[in-house]
Image 1 (cartoon, protein in one colour):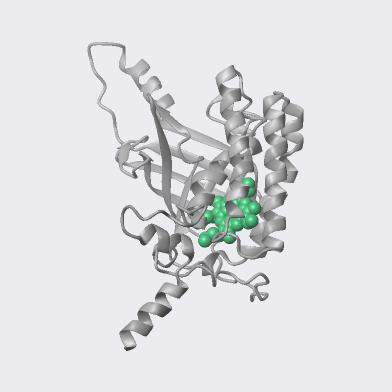
Image 2 (tube, rainbow, N blue to C red):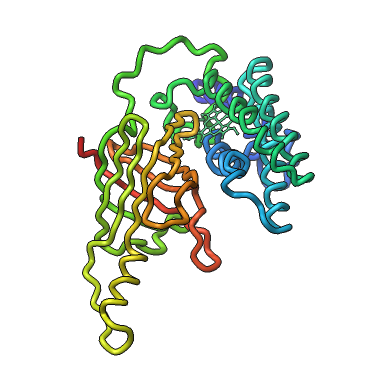
Length: 320
Ligand code: HEC
């Protein structure tokens, strides 16, 4: 008897879409739409890379027809993702959440139009609107980054998701222990990862050395390989090989930078760099903290190696 009641209670707590997908093969699924990802996955794997293309439009201006089409796709993804946020099961309430998601829908739709018109000015002008659409929802529904439910809890299909974040989260106490990018970080590892998380290559060899310093809105990044190369004796002179080696194994750049906590990114206006073509560019890097370590790198999938799109991941430890 007790078991029956427990089963009934459980069944009642599982949202429709999930009971449907748990049904036997051949059963027609009842929900008109079904979430496939968690909220966090939708943000990280779809919305964030898509919106990034619009945020950094001025430094990544499409040059070819194919690039414009790609940008149109990303703008469309931003707009349509807003619909995904409004789906039953994802929407956390029917008013503020919907209003916040609509901001994103509007910004995405405008971006899609501008991308179709190849209107750089309009795309650039949309940045604030799009940015506000992310931050206003985050302020309302993602107020405390440190208190998010564990992935295990959100992924488990039997976990009812109806009781997620209340519409008006109570004001939280000041987060004194919140990790910050400010300070000095020493490089531990540098890896280029494939989409499946496996290591494709070590961009600065087995023993990279380097540091990132973020102080009072100024950022310094320096990385080199500490492996001593053995130069082939038959081809070019050792001096030339050393020059080539240094060029490919050393990077450094610095400049004023702005930390954007809304999407855990830092944007650096490069005023000095090892490579002249970095000068004057804006470089955006993303960071998160893992057990006190800093995980730092450019946008996921932004490193090209042949046909592969790799994700660069630097792991650093705090020095001070
Ligand atoms: C209607 C609400 C809403 C909108 C609009 C929204 N987000 Fe989010 N976002 C969330 C919620 C809720 C979370 C927390 C998800 C979680 O951890 O379960 C989140 C988390 C994130 C995360 C962190 C995910 C993680 O697991 O670390 C990123 C990155 C992110 N959003 C990017 C964006 C960007 C970029 C935009 C705008 C283009 C945006 N979001 C718009 C609600 C929203």
